Image (cartoon, rainbow, N blue to C red; front, side, top):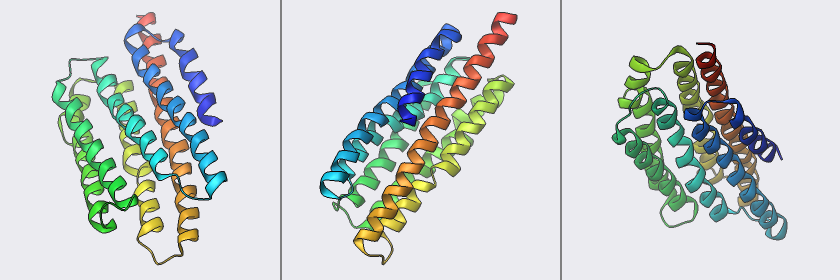
Length: 218
């Protein structure tokens, strides 16, 4: 329900911001909308079978996580010209991270090698937004409000996203019973999705409103 409420909020708030920020807010709303729909499916699977709906969860992530990564590109594009390489590097890192995780959770690969592949994709994303071209453009070209939002977003990717490998670890790489592991996995993943997806959108909304009001005042 929090994801649905966030979707309504982001779509309504598009009217408050200037045209160059509308796409960012639309993407934020799409992320929370897609996640909320998938959570209805996942809830039904859990109620009916008592099993973790891995496929639905990864379908959700394969759509929403790339959209979250696109937000880095979009907020920089709103204030300067950004090379397309930034976009593609973020996409490559995202899909490596997700595909590695899925192969391990779905049993197509041993869990440790799959975990390492997923972590490598995450590390590649972190490098790009901190030390790569995206990070450099933010430091050199972005106004203070955009820099603040960019920094907050990459803190979410750094510290908020650490919840996901923890979920994978406690769900698949410990000696806990399958039932205990599944319960831990669901609690950790669910909390992370609500925190990260809504918080990500609120950061975008904050900078969009701030920059739009600053432009009007000027």
